[in-house]
Length: 203
Image (cartoon, rainbow, N blue to C red; front, side):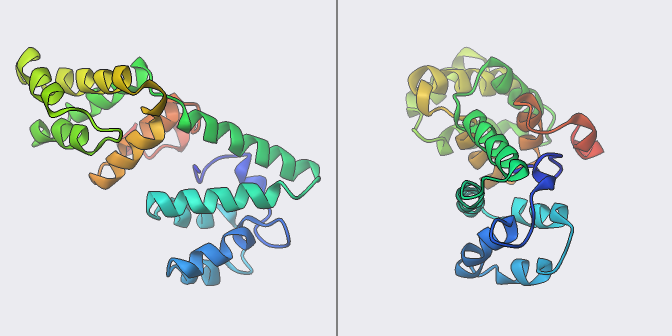
């Protein structure tokens, strides 16, 4: 849920179909009730969505599902537009990765200091799993090139588990590695965020 999304920012915060209202129970159950309390009475959905963007991936998805199901109960035009927009975004995130996605991740990994271990950490965390033999073969075949190792191992993951090799799973792993900033580039590639709304340091 990009917090800068122009369509999503049109959604009401409170009321029976509000996105804040939809997340109330989830936020209290996961011990983040302060987010709800802080934004109650606010008229700025962007700061609320920014707060949601910092949650753990499973909690973000839980909130996402609650928002969609809440908006689905409304027949009002603006709410249905937001709901349909979110569903399209969900479909894009759940879809298998493609060559452009694994190329951009490989390019980002190649920029980091101590980048040598990153692609292996990513490969070991991906689900469904990549066989250890694939990781070893990739390193030998690509002679240790970080960019090529990352690109090839993601390609092998896709070839083995096409329907399950999703952008959502890739983004989960990047977040767990402390590299959630790479997710900006994936969202841009998927058409979920505009370049001007990505932090300058991440463009």
